[in-house]
Length: 227
Image (cartoon, rainbow, N blue to C red; front, side, top):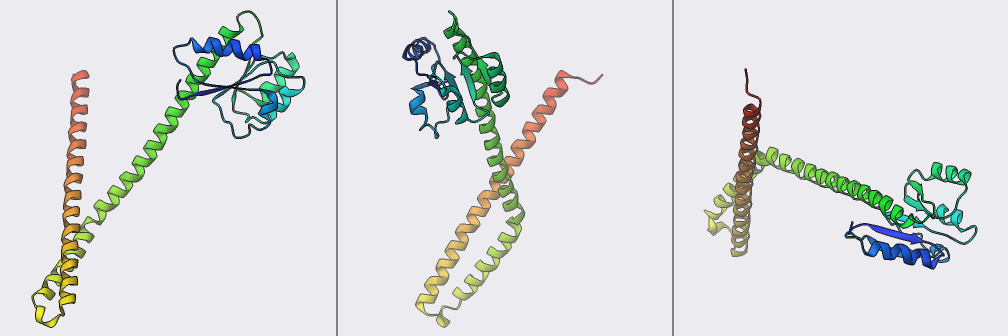
């Protein structure tokens, strides 16, 4: 949970001290921060993975919740009437209420751990989706380059051929023109080398995919032999 963050929002210093102390002895400690309701007015840019709300000044709970997104994970440890809790849960589906009994700290840590693990899982899924999208874009670019390889090679052949023809008659060109044509010829040869390397890599990838598919089919056949 090192890449997760928890905000403790309370006006009760003892509440914050007890909860922070209990968290410090845990093996996996998230990033912790403590804010009072007065300071929370300026906390619009704060986006913690979990908010633990402790006792607040009278009238501050509704004010604090109004600034939070509806999908934020909230553990409420402040006194609240049943009707008020029902209304809050409609607006904040991920809100949980923990009564301030003797075991409230253990209950908060248990619920917080589950919430943060869920947050981590969601983050991992999003990262995986982002990598998949990036890989798909790169694969599309690779397929385009493969499709265009023949056209590029034809253009390079024409470019190299014309450059070489011009260089066969140096007397008709100035020294500067000859130097420029030699540069064009050299750069065209370099591009040709790059395209050859790309073709080699594409073949290696195809061979690897074929081998991998063969191994998968062989493994499947060994596990489920035909009768």
